[in-house]
Length: 589
Ligand code: ADP
Ligand code: MG
Image 1: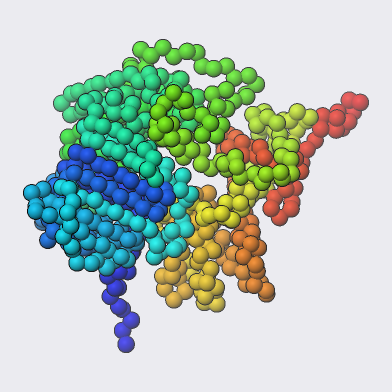
Image 2: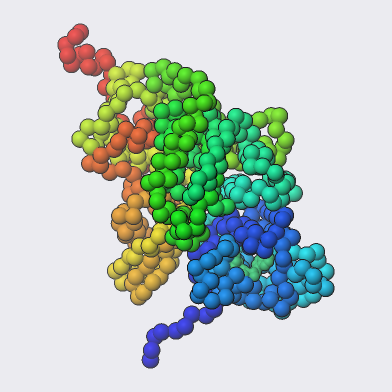
């Protein structure tokens, strides 16, 4: 008998959903794009529980005809493309007809719409891929798409989601980008009745930026304009003193949509190179319009990455325009840093965001600012995490993270300390740092994962297959989404960001060996075993060269470690030699 079966429609949709819908912010992206395609002037976004419980997007666009409603939630059904010819002149944001069916496959979806000029509206619901027949309802012109219980039927995915505040911050970021890209439309975003963003139609870009972005970031923006036959460029740049801790402060828009583009990013950073300390990023809003023939937007399914026909020239143009604009901005001399201590501004940035912010700003704005900086610092544990009344904070590994250091034999880091010097086993220390970061986190939630462009395949020993199948949830908590692929083959779809692809197979093998042990381990014990393996595989190896930035980054993460730091298996990670010992050895006394 043959073995090949056609997949049921619901499974096909769920697989497609995995590609389109990663988290609540992806739902928002798809729904807002549909509203934009429908010619909406006003778009209202409401969310609950970080978007995990509910996302509803209402627009005043052209609406969906009652007879079209069942088609709108059907795979590969679209009103935006009629034949293959149309593919080459796409003017809409969507055209694949995949978003609504994908969302419908993994949530409770309800679409309510009234086409302009129709007598009444219609509504239908989709539950796990099955649509009800449309019902007539009274409603205003336009469309509301209501998405509840995202991933209710794919628990592994649901577990991949982060805390409400983090998912909310992703949504906020997404909405802000659309609001910046479409200044003449009204965008409003509320979370559990709290207004997070309200941007009424703005006559000019600068006003829109001020409505949408954190106040302190956009205080001294200077405009840059340029126009020639092939390129139209409009930008707002902040003085170097307003630098930010990550590259999200560089907002890039091409032909009306937000993009992520290395070439442009680099061109901007290059212009600020001499005026901003390394590790900080300028605040820039760059809007470019190019002839469609000059750029290929179809290289990325979400079209956020693009390819320029003449990238080199564009790079040079952007850098030189920005340099010229910066010359006009009076930058105060760079802050003096004494003995390598971080500049005060950096210290400030690391304080917990909810205490910062602009006290004079309206509450919604403050929430947004807090969220934005929360997103930036989300890897730091929130202050409330320490058990109240617990043991006193351990003495730090070393008081100053910025004393001179050097790597020897690609295995040890030697660093000057107050009382002499210390020799760090790079692998042991990195392992400890990673373990301490991972362990408390998996106790609460899953580790954030990144989707691999090409899944990694694992060929297992037959005897291991059912063991792995029985522990897919365990791996999922550590950021590895794994599916069965063949009789003894599995595909790894996602990995945690710090685990190199080359280490994945060994990591899985080792965990499976650990789990083969005689007695079935208690759940907590299991988590601990896996955390140790993950820390070991994710940590820098002995024999691996580290550059200055990598060493600094590692040392910066050691602040909370006790003096007698060991790796998770108990080997020492640091050996110390005091000045007194050195003096004795050199017979100075
Ligand atoms: P696509 O946007 O790629 O066409 P979707 O699954 O996102 O696919 O939407 C399917 C169809 O449903 C669209 O082509 C459009 O006709 C209709 N539609 C979806 N959302 C809206 C909306 N907000 N307003 C009007 N029509 C909509
Ligand atoms: Mg769409």
